[in-house]
Amino acid sequence: MVAMLVVVAGVLAWALWPAAAPPPRQREYRAETACLLTGEKGVAAPEAVPVWAGMQQASLATHVKIQYLEVSGPQTPENAETYLASLVQSRCDLILTVGAAPVGALRAGAARFPTVRFVGINGGNASSNVSVVEANSPQVAQQKSRELIAALAS
Image: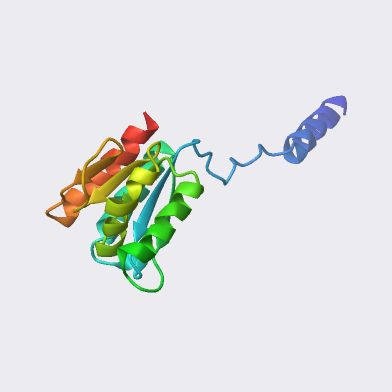
């Protein structure tokens, strides 16, 4: 009888024991943020698709935060400069630009923000805080953006 009670108590304890908590669903990000400035079509623009894909792949691997901002209104470098400044104010550690207006804004506005690192994809003028990446294919653009984000994490 005592043995039966011990077995029943053991089975009940095992059945009612709380399950282990599931792993957290949120991703723990690093402090670094990489941003992409695009034209009005955003990350759906043909020139932005591979860059954004590379940034997403790198973010999954490195946990660097990524975000993008599209230029609304006139697609001119002067208008895009406002959006470039917004990304700087958002404390982006690395800002990539793709498309005519964003790259034009980079040419005109990067000198005002000497502590921010910029990358012009297929355009821009290299300087102390601006790098230019020539990506002659979508695969190269994706690979280069992935490498830039990975370097930010190291």
